[in-house]
Every structure is written in C-alpha cells, then in structure tokens.
Length: 102
Image (cartoon, rainbow, N blue to C red; front, side):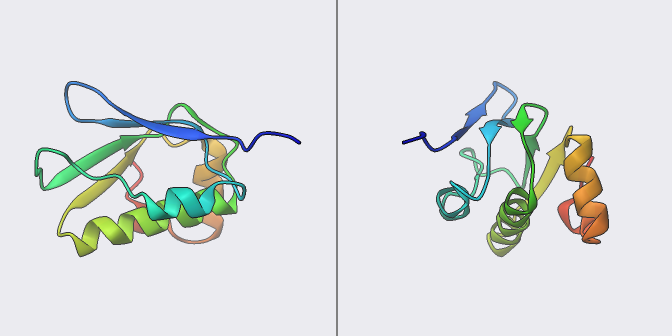
C-alpha cells in the first residue's frame, strides 16, 4: 500500500503560513476540513505556496474553500508564490482574482 501524500502548514515569525508537500485528491478532504487561520487575530493572512507540490484541480478546490472560509470569518487570505501550473489551472477556471494570487 502506498502512503497518502501529505502536506503541512508551517508558520514563520511574520505570521506567513507556508504550505509544504502536496494537496491532492488523496488528502483534499483533510485539507478542506482544516483551513488556515491567523493565531493572532489578524485581519489578513498570507499563505506561501512556493513549496506546494503537484497542484491539480483538488488543490485548486481546497484553496477556493480556504478563501471562502477566511471570508466567512471576516479575514482576508492572500496566496503568495503560487506555482505556474496552479496559476494556469486557476486561469483556465477563471478564479485567479477569487484566489487573490500575488
């Protein structure tokens, strides 16, 4: 049996979260159920996607869900350093602006 590819969220001293690993069909439900949040009550949160691996439509769906969850909490969410493949997929789906890629 092949292990489920994983991802993790890491926070730096400035409060930026970094996604490491892969968010895929294998773990999208887990990622969907655990949207990122700011521990210090900030009005906005930056999520660095530079170390994200193998972005696919499941990844895109999770990022959209995370953005929606942040808006429901009254918080802004901005994705930084999105990989080119993910940017292209977001462009095809016409959700670039919704995700706030920076």
